[in-house]
Amino acid sequence: MGIPLYKKYANYFDELKKLSHAAAKIDETSVYETANLSTQKIMFKMLEENLLPGSKLGNIENFKAFYDAVQSGKRGLILSEHFSNMDLPEIIYLLEKHGEPWSIDFAHKIVAIAGMKLNEADPFVRAWAEGFTRVVIYPSRSLSSVEGSDSISEEQKKEEEQRARKINLAAMRAMDECKKRGEVILVYPSGTRYRPGKPETKRGLREIDSYLRMFDVMLLVSLNGNCLRIDSENADNMLADLVTQDVIIHTASPVIDCKQFRKDVLASLPEDEPDPKQKTVDRVMEILEKQHDEVEKTRQGTN
Image (cartoon, rainbow, N blue to C red; front, side, top):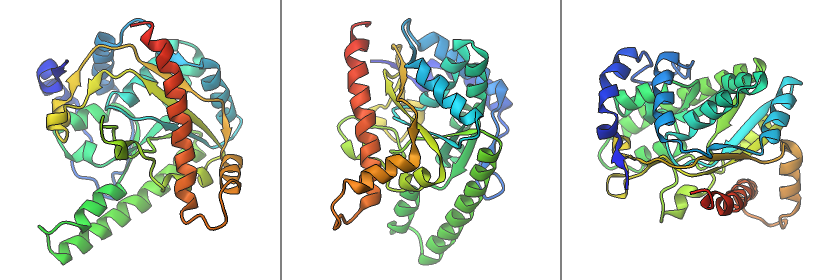
């Protein structure tokens, strides 16, 4: 079943909090956060305890081809499946463990797009997240929840809308700077962790279509295995996630030209398609799921 995170790693809580220096409240001045290498070391210790033999990067040659494309000047985007708050630490850890100069440099170039909840929910979660470089955004789902709330005034809703706008404009500028530096942007297109039995949490957000227009090449990364599983009875509490040892495989698609991909999907749609942006993102998710299912057949044989 697994041990709740707050029980399994309670011994790290105080240390992580002492090492943490990320913003507890996000505004437009704090959207770009570089990796805190002190907390990252603790995260890697956790991974070493929970990643079973056989954990790896699948199709390593595709990771290398994508890295080479970015090195040549292409603006690179990673779109990945999302199951837990271990996903980002895992891919960076596995790239570093691969041990080649290119893979280590690749690990250092990844900048994840992260929701502000990771900073604002809990000091331990914040310290966990800040081990890795991020651009923090105000997610559309969070704003929709505020707008639909009956517990706050219209004035408060307007203030929150303005806050969201400022944060996301600053995040866009920060992402542009990342691209200029040759960093790679990693986005979870579902915008949330997948919750078993809730297919809506695995649906891609239509905003991802905008990313396809801003980048040159993309890598689609499926994820098999999960060391940090959501407790269905306490799904909103990230500290209640269940720590479980598992074989973890992050598998890369071939490098995809973003503009051609988008053009091909749009060309396949009927002229009266009411939401072509969503269809583009749906195609991304279909490829990820197909890749995931193919890898899972092999992975199950290793358990």
